[in-house]
Amino acid sequence: MIKNSINNIDLKLNERERAILRSIVNLYIANASPVGSRKLSKFIKHNLSISPATIRNVMVDLEEMELVTHPHTSAGRIPTDKGYRFYVDYLMQMEKISEQEQQVINSIADDGKDSDSILKETSKLLGILSKYLAVVRIPTVKEIKVRKLELIKLSSTHILVVLALESNIVNTVTLEARFEVEDGHLEQIARAINERIVGRNINDLKTSFPEIMTDIELSEKPLIRLFVDSVDKIFNLKSVNNKLFTSGTQNLLELPEFEDIARVKSIIELVENEDIIIHLLDNMPEQNDMQVYIGSEIGDKQLSDYSMIVSNYNLADSGSGAIGLIGPKRMQYNKMLPLVKIVSELLSGKKN
Image 1 (cartoon, rainbow, N blue to C red):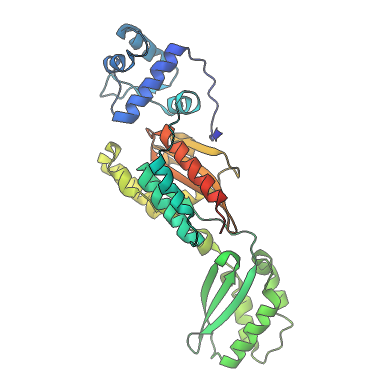
Image 2 (image 1 turned 30 degrees about the horizontal axis):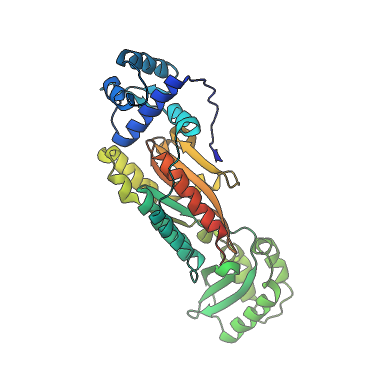
């Protein structure tokens, strides 16, 4: 089922209005130029017997319903966000994935790949198959246990902390001491810490770590204080969670919309500042339904000229994440929705 963030359209269009709106959207998606009555008449004459005068009248009606509009420089019409929404919800006809595309998609699930490799390849394949910008959000780490902590002496005053977690996640941080660190003390404290934290939830350790360190008896108390004071660094998973794979920026730059240099700068900034996309994906409803966001529905001014198709996935042993496509509002929804759906389902069925 396809869901969207704003779906309050309550319009009753007759068959003629539906046919003309569908044709306007299809033509604009295909050609990226405003659709005039003459072009529209030629396009639909094989299916409906409608005179050019009637078509013009219906186009006026559709504009009054705010489903289409016309640029100042053209007499032709283009869909509005509301028009695209009605098209996606009620008018478009889905296209099936080709056998060749299916084979390419199935290659994602080849055995022997770790989670990062699978997701990175997913973004690449989505970008190639869609010809839009593909985004893949890695699973967010929330409830995960510690496997092991290692302390490595980098210099007399610098220590590398390596925190190994479930799902092959590793977090590293370098700590600087204001005193010289002795090898023997480092090995001793690493052993003591592991006895207390292995198998425990990382979120719990953020608050309980200082307390569980109090019973460790070491002659080098400043070393204990260094770890207690650095708890936020050691157990901070922001660098792990804020991970996004993107692919296909060049695809967007080749579209007619990006002849405008401002659009080019906008999409480059979007890709470079991944926080915007991560924020949008993280605020998706936690469900498996497809989500389609069109223009203003996205809720971000920088993305008001774009559409997003997004779906959650659940990668075995790694948790849930999200995949999606970002493209112009004249996106080929009927082809892209099945593509995103089948890829998300494949990821969710993947067993590591």
